[in-house]
Image (cartoon, rainbow, N blue to C red):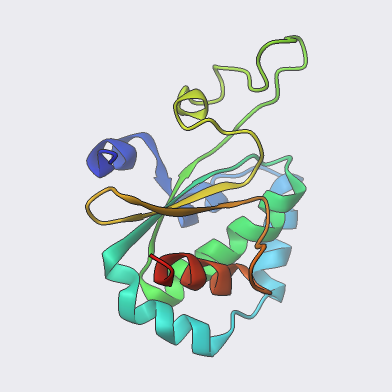
Length: 155
């Protein structure tokens, strides 16, 4: 189990993460947000269980999969009340042969959580127990919101 209060202190809500992003990256994230329409049936199901879960995501502005998925997380969060927290600004460490991520500016939690790829999405229940992960993109369903529901319901 993890300490959710500590996670909240070290992260930002997904909407704040997107609003503080700088261009040219912000444009790609916002374009995805404006063009995406979550599946309403899935949103309705998530809304009924949103208060029992929290999503923690590791993201980077330069990451194509993050630009595709993190805006969807914000839409789902707003539509359902699902709490989504972001460890942002993850950076590659091109100068190191041992470390994949540069710390700082990447948060040290990239090591704690074993982050290999981005986005690294972890779903927890409100007690801090891990429900599952979504790494890069959905693998069991056709959309991120469906994958969130699938991950939550399989436990």
